[in-house]
Image 1: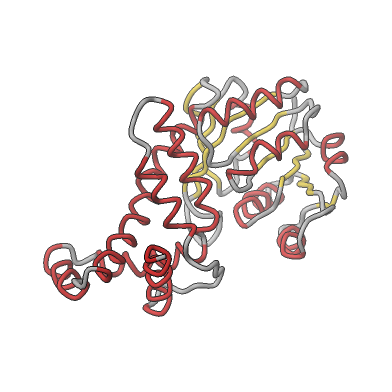
Image 2: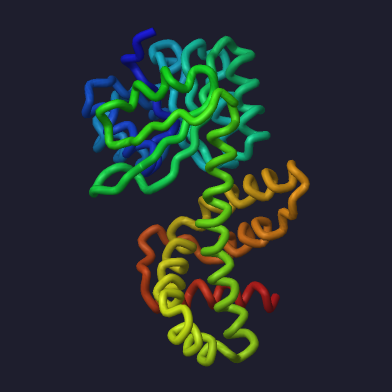
Length: 282
């Protein structure tokens, strides 16, 4: 089946970036403005999406639906399009068990499910965005991204393998970011931040700069990563491995105040560390 019309649910920074690339190579990309925020509208218009108005119109007029949303919303978003008969690509950071639930919703309504896992920033600016795909229909979905800035890679016929890979990758990249922040907050709490920073400069000189970047990420993106850490914890738990690392990471990311424009600087670091210490004291 030739895929020409694609629905994006719902266009956040990543979804808008991927969709814009699809528009550039000739696809018609639609979104549903009903109930969405002004920020979503601005992103959709900047990406040259066609406003279908409602989810129902997306279901009726699209060959493929791409879901890129916070992990906690992935199952609910799939339920919004239950009955869609085309190709449904879930590219959310979800546990394999959640991916199987999403697949069940889509397939029970007559659609075909493709599991996806995104690694890297949104397309643009010379960055590389990899989209790992799995499931029987993954090769068909992969073809949609040819000639775009998204490097789509089919890894398995297993309909939850892409999600499993995403969980493993983010368990390290985002889990260690939370751990670094928590360690620095601990050093403040027990009065050894100065000696710790001095030792880092001697033995691990990159950690000081990494902690600045970690604070910026926690403030600007941490609110979105809470659900992802919960999904990673569930992935570990499902195979009998300890899940406490990422349950703690979810708590770390839940504490700083949300600041979409936070910079990787000392002010942001101080604010994030204060938030961790203040709430721990309570």
